[in-house]
Length: 148
Image (tube, rainbow, N blue to C red):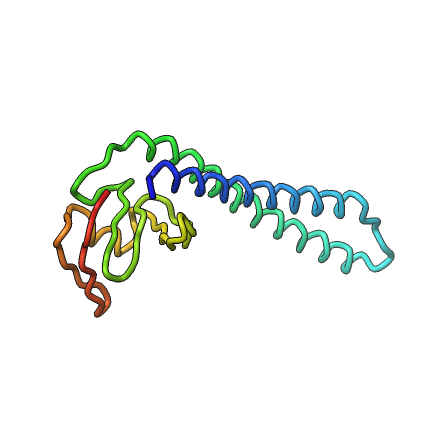
């Protein structure tokens, strides 16, 4: 598994999510445009307010996806290091972690990779360590097997 392959999969996941959210926005906006004011004005206003809240949530999620997509080119430029840093892939006794994008798990080359943000507690504990290091987090011991 290479960082390029991982970032390509991450980009594809984010673009797919972005497309799904944009379709949801279009559906909600179409529903709002087609909604006619009924004689029960409060019901109409409540429905519109709920739709607007949903649109606001989706726009927030779209902004986060855009932020994550903008991080990928930066992560691509970070060269490999024997020391854990933002952009590192870290293999531990508890699994493989990619530091830099909080995406959850991705399946890369039939291996599950947990993508965590640089601000995550585990990422902060791993930062600056190299192969052979042991860290404790929430009662769990993580043995760093390799960093690439």
